Amino acid sequence: MHSLQSVEFRCACATSGKERWHTCVLGKSLIIATNRFMSKKYFDIHAPVFYPSAIIILIFIGLTLGIGEPMEEIFSKTTAGITTNAGWLLVLAVNIFLAFSLYFAFSKMGKIRLGGPKAKPDFSTFAWFAMLFSAGMGIGLLFFSVAEPILHYSNPPRGATNPATAAQDAMKFTFLHYGLHAWAIYAIVGMSLAFFTFNKKLPLTLRSVFYPLLGDRIHGPIGNIIDVVAVVATLFGLATSLGFGVQQVSAGLAHLFDTPDTVSMQVFLIAAITGAATVSVVLGLDKGVRVLSELNMRMGLIFLIAMLILGPTVFLMDSFIQNTGAYLQELISIGAWTESYAGTTWQHDWSVFYWAWWISWSPFVGMFIARVSKGRTVREFFLGVLLVPSLLTFLWMSVFGGSALFLELNGIGDIATAVNENIATALFVLLEEYPWSFVTSIIGILLVTSFFVTSSDSGSLVIDSITSGGKLDAPVGQRIFWALSEGAVAATLLLGGGLKALQTAAISTGLPFTLLLFVMCYSLYKGLSREFEDMQQQKQLKERESYRQVLSELIAKRQKKNKVD
Image (tube, rainbow, N blue to C red; front, side, top):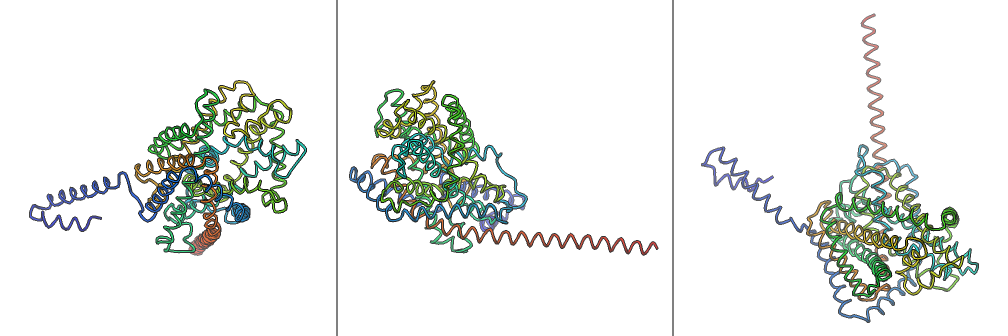
C-alpha cells in the first residue's frame, strides 16, 4: 500500500533494528495518511467536471447581474423560441419515458434486484416513500396546488364554457403535470443510476449509465461532458424550485404579517433558508435529509388532513375519485395533446414548461432516488416510484385545488382574482376562507420552508457526488459550496427576471438533457437485458448442479444398497 515510502524509510532506519524499522514504517504511513486526509478534508473534486460546471454557473451569475433589467426580455424570447420550436419533442419524450417505465416494470426484467439477489433495502418503506415525495415534488405541490387548478379554470385549456366541465378539465391537466409522466422521468434516471452503480459497481454519476454504449470511454472527455450537462441542468432545475418556494414564503409572510413582498425580501429569505439547508447538508443523508424528509411527510399529512376536515370533505373525496378516473381515461390523449389545431399557446406555457422543468430536475431526483433504493427489485422500484407519489399528489391536488374550485363554483369566494394578481399568494388566500386560517397559513409557510431545505440539501448531495467522480461521501466543504451555489443562482434568477427567468432556466437546461435521456432508455434496456440473461444462466447452472448432486446421492445410495445385498 505504501511500498515506495516504506522502502525509502527502511533504508534510512535499517541500522536501528527490526523493531525500530516497523515503528518507523508505521509512523511514515500515518503521516502520509494524515496528509491525504487533510488535503481532501474539505474538497475532493473530479476537476474535469467540477471546474467547467462552476465556471458556467459563475458566468451565468455574472452576466445576469451585469446586464440587469434587459435580461428579462432575453429570458422571455428564449422561452418562447424553445417552446414554439421544440415543444413537440418534450411532449413526445415524456410519453416515451412512461412507456419504457411500464415496460421495465412488467417485463421479465422486473425480478432483478438493485445491489444483487441478496441485497436488502437500506430504508423502511415509509422512509423510502417519504424521501421520494419530498425530493420529487415538494415545493411545486405547495406553490401550484391552488394556483394551477384555478388558472386552468379561469382559462380552460380546451376552451370549455360549462363551469363544471372547465373545473373537470382544470384538475385533469393538473394531474397530467404532476402524475405518471413526471414520475416516469425520475424513474428512468433513478433506475439507470441505481442499476449501474449497485449492480455493475460503477461510480454514481450520469456517465456510468452510458457504459453499455461507450465502454471505458465514459471515463474520458465524453463522460465529463455528460456529467457537466447533468450538473448544470440539476442546479438550474433546483434553482427554479427554490425560486418558486421563496416567492411563496415571502407572499405568505406578507399576507400574514404585512412584511414587504419584494425581490430584496426574497433574496434575504433565500440566504436565510440556504443557511439552514447548509446545516442539513453537513449532517449528511441519514441524519439530515432522511430526518427532514420524514418530518415533511408528517407535516404534509397533518396539513392535508386539516384541509380535508375544514374544507368540503364529501365534495373533495368525490372529486378525488372522479378526477383520478377522468385522468386515467384520457391519459393518452391529453398526454399527447400538442394544441396543433387550436393555434393557441396554453400548452407551451404550461405542459412544455413542466416537462422541461421535471427533466432538468431528473438528474437530481433520479440520483437521490437511486441512493435510497438499494435492495428494491426493478418492478418494486418502478411501481413504487410511479404509483405511490402520483396517488399522494392526486389526493393533495384534489384537496387543495378542489377546495378552491368549490368556492369558485358556488360563488363563495373569488380566488381567481387574487391568483391572477399574485400567483404566490394562492394558498394563503384559500386558507383565509376556512377556519383556523392563521394556524394553517403558518403550517403552510413552515412546510414550504422545510421542502426548500430538503430540496436544497438533497440537490447539494447529488451535485457533489457528480462533481467528485461518483463518491457517495465526499467532503463537507464541497456540499457547502454547492448548497450556497444553488441559493446564489435562485437569487440571481429572481433579480434578473422573476418568474419568467425561473421558467427559462428550467426549459433551456431541460431541453438538451432530454436528448441524453433518450439514449439512457436504450442503455438501461441493454444493461437490464444482459443482467437478466446472466441471472438465467446462473439459475440454470444452479439447477444443473442441484440435479447432479441429487443424482450423485441416488447413485451412492444404490451402490451402498448393492454392497449390503
